[in-house]
Length: 112
Length: 116
Image (cartoon, rainbow over all chains, first blue to last red; front, top):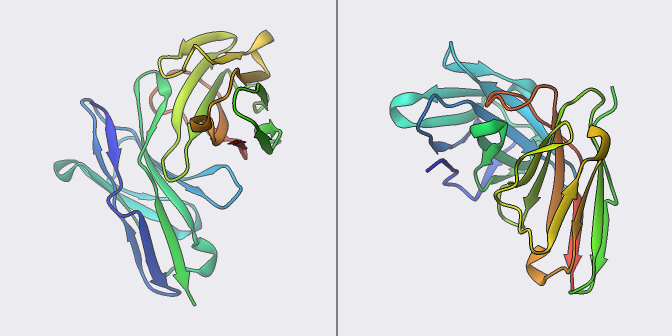
């Protein structure tokens, strides 16, 4: 079955600290992977995506993610978190027919 | 370029009432999606249109939910009658191409529905 797991429901980091959000996927074919961010009252904004090639993907707002096939993971990272990064983050895999299969999300809080 | 538009942004209804949500996708986007996002969960696809045809409605509770995309542009999602468990954010998304697994979807701000 196709699924995405985000093990951490809520993470708190200090401003300026590094961040890593975990994502594990289960998909039978080659995965197409996405990270989206959702601020309160807003829709989802695409941070980055992985289709093929270099397994380290750069995105907007200073985010990057690394695809590790052997671990079925696509973790999101940022070297220095800003207060404006506080939001909910969703990992997703592109499923059959183009639909997105989302994880349950990780809520990020940033301490001053 | 204008994004995906949705209305209303918020709706509060009593159970067993009816409600409708409207979505206007990005101009030129052939594919339109409706997702349901229950509090604390990731979005789940309800229905996918390619132009004005349905591609996937396997997760749509068809006894109470209906959706249409007349003329292949705007779309309306309806719930009749609503249940308490329908309280959620309803997200509309669109994409330029169609059914490729890698196509990028653009999301609207969502409609937050509360059923009392």
